[in-house]
Length: 130
Image (tube, rainbow, N blue to C red; front, side, top):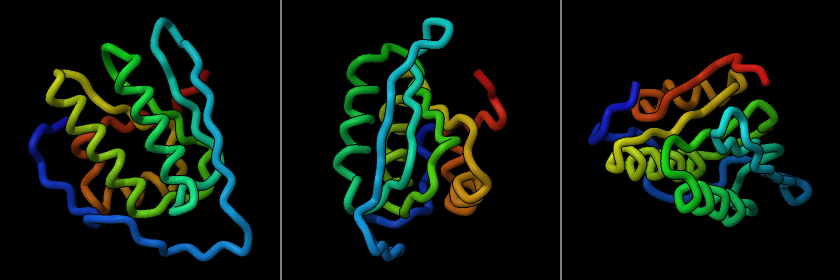
């Protein structure tokens, strides 16, 4: 359910909760599916890759006139600040009369979204296959 104005229960800023022995690996690709831009995210999003995730969201918000779809099936880790970035994107889209869609979330992403309430301001589309 997409609810504009709902308070998000996530943190207010970046925090590093996951310790890596090596830099995180993150990548994305933009694909068209039925005329809809879909951003497939892969790897880990943490302090070392926040800038790349911010770039994905900026591109998505600038280039799409409607929904922004993030396919997160291949994500292995996200931190709390990633959820905050998604929340801000969802609020921006809501103000435009659109929505953020988080597609194919792994169990850990789905659970984080539920615990923080992000699933109430961004649409979750589980098990959507290509």
